Image 1 (cartoon, rainbow, N blue to C red):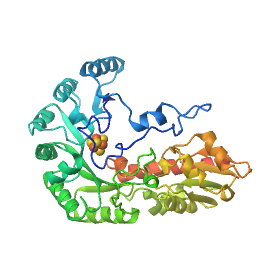
Image 2 (tube, rainbow, N blue to C red; image 1 turned 90 degrees about the vertical axis):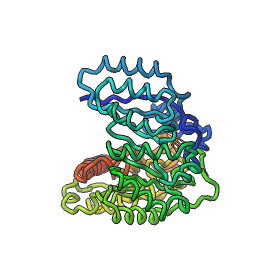
Image 3 (cartoon, protein in one colour; image 1 turned 135 degrees about the vertical axis):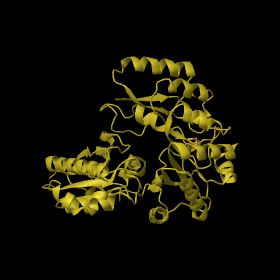
Length: 408
Ligand code: SF4
């Protein structure tokens, strides 16, 4: 069964009827390529870390180009199409020929998914029926709040009542995963509670709460901090408690990013599973593992349960995947062992990382660990607990084997 992704292009913010107040793309500046796992060994910077990560597109693609693209890819597919997903840098609801696009894709007769929409482009509630008739089966919909005035003010949604009417209709008919960036003092507290109640009553499958970030160490690595001058941010602990509270009061699935999925216990659900931890390979060598502030304590606990001997060093960056060379430059190399393992997806150029982490003159081997050691809320939203545990088992077994192979 093949899965077809239809890229409609578009620029975040610019092809979304203007930037939402909290949009991370709002202040993205031209930056030197960060470097990443895809860069060729002789060159810092590749398409992924210099372009894709900023979601650089020139604008929405013409419907004819999108259709040609779909047709040519269909010719390569021998299997039945099991799912068609609309994705892009801009917001699908703002695509100029959205109705034509959906009607065209419905002719493929496969369930249609919209990977992400803010709904800002929906000005007529009747679009919901068209989407349902055309086979839309799943959508991730940014709600922010069910109070129209807040959507208008913070998302610059010109027709918030219509967007919410579309969301309401979709909730009753198809799988809707709502999402919201949580701005302290704006859409948290009773406003968030009201949003959860509204969604649950109407049949949404779940809500992902996203912690707002406003500083470099909170993940804004594209010289885009602050997004909102003076805006308070929840601490990691505050945010986890908000998610825990919401989840305990509502039947609908509620999870948060960067923390956490209370139903599954992720990230790092495996830490509470002694039987599974006992099945992981034992650590036989020593190494230093570099990680972010959120993951580091979990990682330490799990690696200790595998026999210990591995130091986990947290850099001043909440999310391990968003570690850059600046974070590594702040690490004192004298505290590092001969083998240093970086997060697989860290935005660093391997050679540069090696130079920075051996600047005390001691030889060290710097390698990357698995791409992901756990499932974040966006990933775990559609997974069972067993699937998440399986993913974590595989990833940690891989990490331990890497340390045993190259460690001291
Ligand atoms: S809809 Fe999403 S991508 Fe577009 S401006 Fe708002 S937050 Fe940014």
